[in-house]
Amino acid sequence: MIKILITGSNGQVGAELIRIIRSSIDAEILCTDITQRTVEGDGISFEYLDVKSRELTEKIFEKFKPDQVYHLASILSASGEKDPYLAYSVNLTGTVNVLNACVKYNVDKVFVPSTIGVFGPDAPKENAPVRHSSIPTTMYGITKAAAEMLFQYYFDKYGLDVRSLRYPGLISYRVPPTAGTTDYAVDMIRHAAKNAPYICYLKEDTPLPMMYMQDAMEATIKYMHADSKNLTIRTAYNVMSYTLTPEMLYDSIKKFKPNFEVRYNPDFRQKIAESWPYSLDISDSKRDWGFSFRYDIDKTVEDMLANL
Image 1 (cartoon, rainbow, N blue to C red):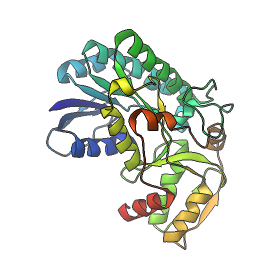
Image 2 (cartoon, one colour):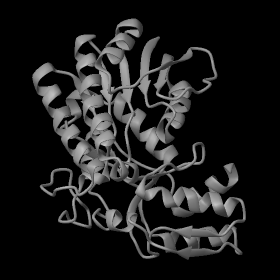
Image 3 (cartoon, rainbow, N blue to C red):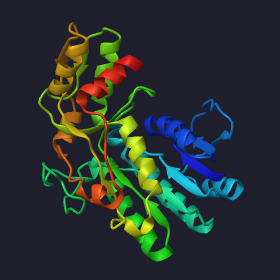
Image 4 (cartoon, helix red, strand yellow):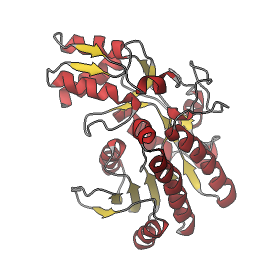
């Protein structure tokens, strides 16, 4: 039985990742976060951890001695613009603390998600490549772009098997949306499930790459099982399922909820969304570790509504 440590376990990805790990891997799991949460199931425990503290981070590693780490603690795009220093501290200082602890305590593999936020407005809008020279415009994107370079550095210097996927907008029903620019999609479907009208903070024709959480988590586990010798990228791989606009999502929801209503009132997140690509080049992921997905837009909405 392997030992898996998860940071930021209370977030949108953490809640889903715990479930899929338990269903696919025989593992003892230690969940950590800055907020307490009841963790259910044999072989799962919880401890407080603020990754900004190197001392606390190393104490957790020394006590638990994980074989694998999923470092999910992060401040997302919208929250990061409200408190850039916190975003810097969590996303960069916290990541360095975790990577250093992984080296010190001989962790086999560590997964750290990246984001489409690493792309700046000058990046190609269609099929944005893994390797790019664009400059992100948010603290979230800046810190994640720097973190991607750290992944390569720790792999080259210490031989640490760091792996990362650039997640697009993720749609899921288990945890309510927090402060991501793409979270309108989750919020819109949640309103539809409650038969409540929705005011969208992006323009109706704003395209962004998206993915259903089930596909994202299955891809993550498949990627973590991939043979290291087949991986040609040590910064982060691109993944996505489809390009989505608020209007496309509304049209899909109307197939299941004909009376659903949406209005549009763009806010500061519109500028962030417009700086990102609307599709990503996923050919490297397909070639190196067999990336695939199962859910299109309508299947995503149907499953979301069924579970909500």
